[in-house]
Amino acid sequence: MTSLFELHADEPRLRQLCLQDTRLAMLVRAVGPLNVPKRTDGFEYLAKSLINQQLSVKAAATICQRVEQQCGGITPDSMLNTSEDILRAAGVSRPKIGYIQGLAQLVKQGEIDFAAWEGMSDEDAIEALTKIKGIGRWTAEMFLIFFMGWDNVLSMGDAGLRRAALWLYEGEKGNGAAVLEQQSVAWEPYRSIASLYLWEAINQGHVVEGPYSKFCEKLAEQQRE
Image 1 (cartoon, rainbow, N blue to C red):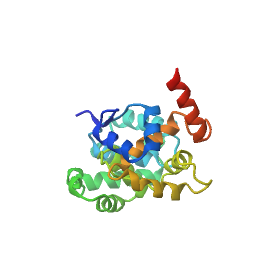
Image 2: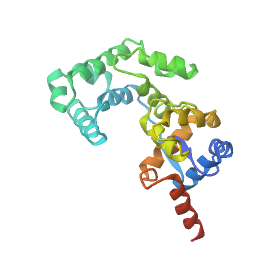
Image 3: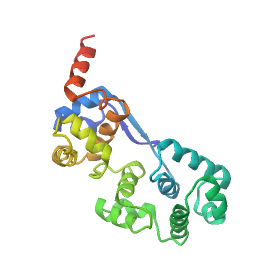
Image 4: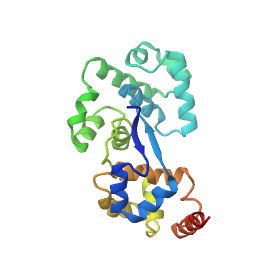
């Protein structure tokens, strides 16, 4: 299996989700198939997440690339064996170096077993993750979606999801959290999948192109062509 999520029109979970929420179904048709690749190294994923915090996507990618080049990869051993000066020169801040090396120590000592989390509930896994210094709830939720591939995780604090939900369901300005919480009831037990399409609505530019009504008009025109 090379994908965590391989979503297309005939995918059973996506079909069920679209039956449960017809407005989301319109967005799914406009966005099209989605594929989220599988990642195999939990430490590398979390270490990069720590590096990425409070940085732009471009800046974070540049720093991660430098770290990989300077250290020969991002592994517990390489992070523990690389001097702080080298990591600082690559662009990693001093606090983040501490978080990453602390995580590396936990992995080396066997105190973190990524495979063991498979049987946990979402909240138990989030609690375990947020006990790791430097990892907050949002980072933990992203790990459960984009590394573990869990179907029903919803990040209520994610600004992008709130923004996209406000657009899709035409809620009152500034009330994205309430709209997200209300509409997500219909997405159970596939809230992660719904989230992927809301994020993609932003990535593909639908949200910034104008209100949802304009999106519907454009979609109708495309269908007539």
